[in-house]
Amino acid sequence: MLMVALYHLVYDLDNFAGYGIESTSGFWAAFADASAAAFLFLVGLSLALSFDRERRGGRRSLFGKYARRGGRIFLYGMLITFVFLAFGYGYVIFGILQLIGVSIVLAYPFLGLRFASAFVGLAVLGAGVYVGAQQIVVGGVAGVLLAPFGVLPEGLFMPDYRPLLPWFGVVLLGLFFGNVAYVPLRKGPPAPAPPAAGPLAFIGRHTLFIYLVHQPVLLATLWALGMVRF
Image (tube, rainbow, N blue to C red; front, top):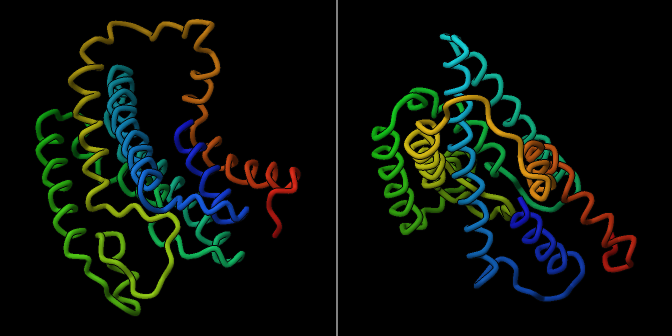
């Protein structure tokens, strides 16, 4: 989350304050991808821990719960889409929140599995790399409908774009890692975080809320400092 916030600060300074940082290419583009990858990997890891907790609690039918959770996050992503459209900042057709919402639902069959999630995750990554290398561009409604699969809509500026191919693969790899490296070590309730890690633990527990509000806070702060004008 700290990496995501730092990147968005750089993006805001580039696009709204005129600093010419080139936030969408070179180092900062790679930094954005690394931030997204870490974010999505932890989404998968968290799904492993959540599912293990529910299973230990004796709950059996959990699809409805995860479907509601994914749907809620997807709707938050659509809210961001409408905000960007309203202010003319571009088209968030399938941003990271839409991706997370859909991924939570698609990952449900793999929640209790290990190597299957790793195998499918690598396959999705490979397919995404292949599709991305083709740089397929499609216009009209078809381009919008295919955007979640890595096909670029023609003529649209997308400031936040994380298609299922390849990024759902990162979620599945995080799920695999959680099931292999974390779940077997859980013998009881989690220990409280050390006092020094309190701020980081707070961010970890409230990541979605912080994600939703950090960009308006950053822009408001830059506006108050006289660095941007709307």
